[in-house]
Amino acid sequence: MTIFPPSGNPWRDPHDDKPFAAVRRTAYGDHAIILRPGADVRDLVGVLRALPASAIFADHYGDVNVTLVFRPVPGASAGAARTAPSNPGPDLVGEMIPAGAIDRPPYGLPSDQCTDALYHSLAGVDLGEHDHTIVRWLARWDAPTVTTVASLIRRARRAELPPRLL
Image 1 (cartoon, rainbow, N blue to C red):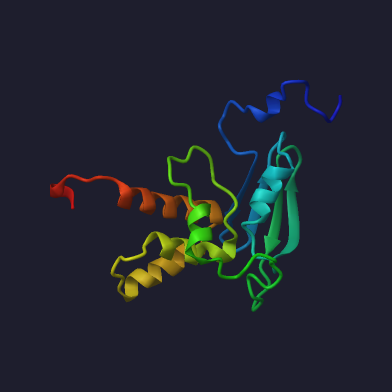
Image 2 (cartoon, rainbow, N blue to C red):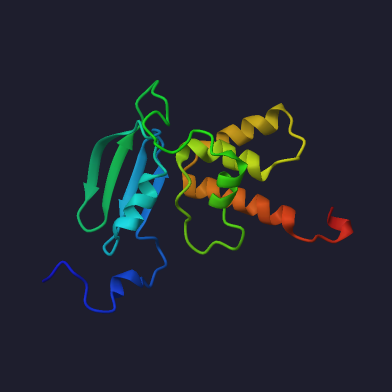
Protein backbone atom coordinates (compact mmCIF):
# COMPACT_ATOMS: atom_id res chain seq x y z
CA MET A 1 0.00 0.00 0.00
CA THR A 2 1.41 3.38 -0.99
CA ILE A 3 1.39 6.35 1.37
CA PHE A 4 0.20 8.60 -1.43
CA PRO A 5 -3.55 8.84 -2.13
CA PRO A 6 -4.90 7.77 -5.52
CA SER A 7 -5.48 10.44 -8.16
CA GLY A 8 -8.34 12.74 -7.26
CA ASN A 9 -7.23 12.56 -3.62
CA PRO A 10 -10.37 11.06 -2.03
CA TRP A 11 -8.83 11.57 1.41
CA ARG A 12 -9.32 15.30 0.92
CA ASP A 13 -13.06 14.75 0.57
CA PRO A 14 -14.18 13.16 3.87
CA HIS A 15 -17.77 12.03 4.22
CA ASP A 16 -18.08 12.93 7.91
CA ASP A 17 -17.14 16.65 7.60
CA LYS A 18 -14.59 16.40 10.41
CA PRO A 19 -11.46 18.53 9.90
CA PHE A 20 -8.25 16.76 8.95
CA ALA A 21 -6.44 18.61 11.72
CA ALA A 22 -7.96 20.19 14.80
CA VAL A 23 -6.77 21.57 18.11
CA ARG A 24 -8.61 21.59 21.41
CA ARG A 25 -7.77 22.49 24.99
CA THR A 26 -7.80 19.62 27.46
CA ALA A 27 -9.15 19.83 31.00
CA TYR A 28 -5.52 20.17 32.15
CA GLY A 29 -4.80 23.19 29.96
CA ASP A 30 -2.78 21.23 27.39
CA HIS A 31 -3.29 21.68 23.65
CA ALA A 32 -4.25 18.48 21.83
CA ILE A 33 -3.72 18.40 18.07
CA ILE A 34 -5.74 15.68 16.35
CA LEU A 35 -4.51 14.62 12.89
CA ARG A 36 -6.62 12.40 10.64
CA PRO A 37 -5.49 10.47 7.57
CA GLY A 38 -5.37 12.80 4.60
CA ALA A 39 -4.10 15.80 6.59
CA ASP A 40 -1.58 17.79 4.61
CA VAL A 41 1.07 20.28 5.67
CA ARG A 42 -1.35 23.23 5.43
CA ASP A 43 -3.73 21.49 7.84
CA LEU A 44 -0.95 20.83 10.33
CA VAL A 45 0.56 24.31 10.08
CA GLY A 46 -2.90 25.84 10.49
CA VAL A 47 -3.43 24.15 13.84
CA LEU A 48 0.15 24.69 14.99
CA ARG A 49 -0.37 28.45 14.60
CA ALA A 50 -3.11 28.20 17.24
CA LEU A 51 -0.61 27.06 19.89
CA PRO A 52 1.43 29.36 22.11
CA ALA A 53 4.97 29.56 20.73
CA SER A 54 6.33 28.54 24.13
CA ALA A 55 4.35 25.26 24.25
CA ILE A 56 6.41 22.09 24.32
CA PHE A 57 5.61 18.65 22.92
CA ALA A 58 4.59 16.42 25.83
CA ASP A 59 2.97 13.21 24.55
CA HIS A 60 1.16 11.48 21.71
CA TYR A 61 -1.68 9.00 21.33
CA GLY A 62 -3.31 7.04 18.58
CA ASP A 63 -2.50 4.94 15.59
CA VAL A 64 -4.52 6.06 12.57
CA ASN A 65 -5.88 9.28 14.04
CA VAL A 66 -2.93 10.75 15.90
CA THR A 67 -3.15 13.12 18.86
CA LEU A 68 -0.12 15.26 19.69
CA VAL A 69 -0.16 16.89 23.12
CA PHE A 70 1.63 20.20 23.69
CA ARG A 71 1.94 21.69 27.16
CA PRO A 72 2.31 25.41 27.85
CA VAL A 73 5.42 26.23 29.85
CA PRO A 74 4.30 27.83 33.15
CA GLY A 75 5.31 31.47 33.35
CA ALA A 76 6.50 31.64 29.73
CA SER A 77 5.22 34.39 27.50
CA ALA A 78 2.73 32.86 25.05
CA GLY A 79 4.14 34.77 22.09
CA ALA A 80 7.81 34.82 23.07
CA ALA A 81 9.11 32.93 20.03
CA ARG A 82 6.60 34.15 17.44
CA THR A 83 7.89 36.05 14.46
CA ALA A 84 4.52 37.71 13.82
CA PRO A 85 4.07 41.11 15.45
CA SER A 86 2.63 40.88 18.97
CA ASN A 87 0.07 43.57 18.14
CA PRO A 88 -0.89 43.35 14.47
CA GLY A 89 -3.45 46.12 14.78
CA PRO A 90 -7.13 46.03 13.98
CA ASP A 91 -6.72 45.62 10.21
CA LEU A 92 -4.68 42.39 10.43
CA VAL A 93 -6.83 40.95 13.23
CA GLY A 94 -9.93 41.87 11.23
CA GLU A 95 -8.58 40.06 8.17
CA MET A 96 -8.16 36.86 10.22
CA ILE A 97 -11.82 36.85 11.26
CA PRO A 98 -14.15 35.46 8.58
CA ALA A 99 -16.88 37.89 7.51
CA GLY A 100 -19.20 35.14 6.25
CA ALA A 101 -20.66 31.82 7.33
CA ILE A 102 -18.09 29.27 8.56
CA ASP A 103 -18.43 25.63 7.46
CA ARG A 104 -15.20 24.21 8.93
CA PRO A 105 -13.06 25.17 11.91
CA PRO A 106 -11.11 28.29 10.86
CA TYR A 107 -7.35 28.33 11.37
CA GLY A 108 -4.72 31.00 11.09
CA LEU A 109 -5.37 33.18 14.14
CA PRO A 110 -2.34 32.87 16.44
CA SER A 111 -3.38 32.03 20.00
CA ASP A 112 -1.67 35.17 21.31
CA GLN A 113 -4.07 37.26 19.18
CA CYS A 114 -7.32 35.77 20.53
CA THR A 115 -7.95 38.60 23.00
CA ASP A 116 -7.30 41.21 20.30
CA ALA A 117 -9.67 39.43 17.90
CA LEU A 118 -12.52 39.43 20.42
CA TYR A 119 -12.01 43.08 21.38
CA HIS A 120 -11.75 44.02 17.69
CA SER A 121 -15.15 42.39 17.10
CA LEU A 122 -16.57 44.26 20.10
CA ALA A 123 -15.16 47.67 19.11
CA GLY A 124 -17.48 50.47 20.21
CA VAL A 125 -19.49 48.26 22.59
CA ASP A 126 -19.73 49.42 26.22
CA LEU A 127 -18.11 46.76 28.41
CA GLY A 128 -18.25 46.34 32.17
CA GLU A 129 -15.80 44.52 34.42
CA HIS A 130 -17.65 41.21 34.09
CA ASP A 131 -17.72 41.65 30.31
CA HIS A 132 -13.92 42.00 30.32
CA THR A 133 -13.65 38.90 32.53
CA ILE A 134 -15.71 36.88 30.04
CA VAL A 135 -13.72 38.19 27.04
CA ARG A 136 -10.46 37.14 28.75
CA TRP A 137 -12.01 33.74 29.58
CA LEU A 138 -13.17 33.23 25.98
CA ALA A 139 -9.73 34.24 24.69
CA ARG A 140 -8.20 31.22 26.47
CA TRP A 141 -10.25 28.82 24.33
CA ASP A 142 -8.67 27.31 21.21
CA ALA A 143 -8.11 29.69 18.29
CA PRO A 144 -10.74 28.14 15.94
CA THR A 145 -13.44 28.60 18.63
CA VAL A 146 -12.37 32.18 19.37
CA THR A 147 -12.25 32.96 15.65
CA THR A 148 -15.78 31.59 15.22
CA VAL A 149 -17.13 33.56 18.21
CA ALA A 150 -15.47 36.76 16.95
CA SER A 151 -16.91 36.12 13.50
CA LEU A 152 -20.40 35.52 14.94
CA ILE A 153 -20.19 38.82 16.86
CA ARG A 154 -18.97 40.62 13.75
CA ARG A 155 -21.73 39.15 11.56
CA ALA A 156 -24.44 39.80 14.17
CA ARG A 157 -23.39 43.45 14.44
CA ARG A 158 -23.48 43.79 10.67
CA ALA A 159 -26.91 42.13 10.30
CA GLU A 160 -29.84 44.41 9.65
CA LEU A 161 -32.17 43.79 12.57
CA PRO A 162 -35.77 44.97 12.74
CA PRO A 163 -36.23 47.86 15.24
CA ARG A 164 -38.07 45.58 17.70
CA LEU A 165 -34.89 43.45 18.08
CA LEU A 166 -32.53 46.35 18.68
